[in-house]
Length: 122
Image (tube, rainbow, N blue to C red; front, side, top):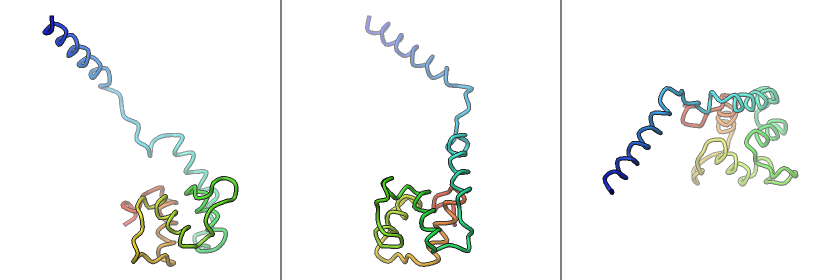
């Protein structure tokens, strides 16, 4: 009885595995909803020469989802804001030696525009 139950379970597992064969996986970058979302972000992007301006801060904040939706959140350019952007856009916590200068702002801008993490930027 145990052997036949085990064989039945093994057969069901094999069938369920085979039913997934032949289907192409949908990767995040190919997901039409994600593509549309990124296109909407890019449509609102300020000119790259405006990096570090108030317009740029507002765009990054919206693209990265830094605010709570009610206008709350850290002040643009503050340490708290920079850390939140680093986590959301780059995907990791900044360390104490990190400088949030114009070079960092360009990296953030490029990562958002290219819809990539920091690991694909360099």
